[in-house]
Image 1 (cartoon, rainbow, N blue to C red):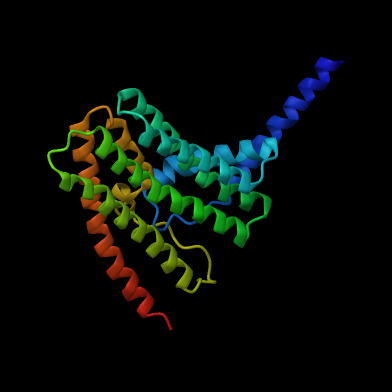
Image 2: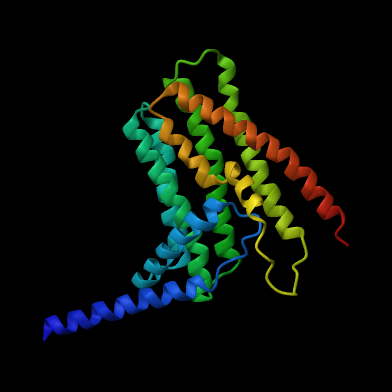
Length: 248
């Protein structure tokens, strides 16, 4: 009898998980301004995590804090330990899971109908600390553990941090200041644009830490990503300013 009740409870939990997953698939945000990684990897992973959080009764804010725990744990490990291939895998895994949970909290909020200013504020505060912290940790790693060709390399994480922060907050403010279109959801963007956005997707950036076991490979890959971010920043700032200037 006890076994039967346990099996019924397990089946009910599975139905709850599957139902939540189906609802989440039908309640996705627009794909505008989203790269292929976020659309086909991070959002689906976040959807599964959101359904799991729904099954165990977590709130969106608790999922946000779980995202912070993974992300900040990876950042702390990057700053505290000497680079190695083992650390590379650990830092990447922590940052990637944190990013997936960052997608899950918003999806869970939409599923529960509990989205609000406080949750959005908490999410953005966690993101702000993550973006600034990860490049600060790279700076610490460069200074403590890397045999750099010159001290000028220590400016690289500071420049990358500036570009990443400006892209994040510039895009965020642009979305907040742009009047919402009541006509309906926007159409999916062109595939080429989603591919072009891959180099500035945070999930793709996380993958650079898989090279942490090789100082030269990591340094040059990180430099290349910074160059791409700088180019995109210049393009984004001009585009966003023109679009907001046209708003009446």
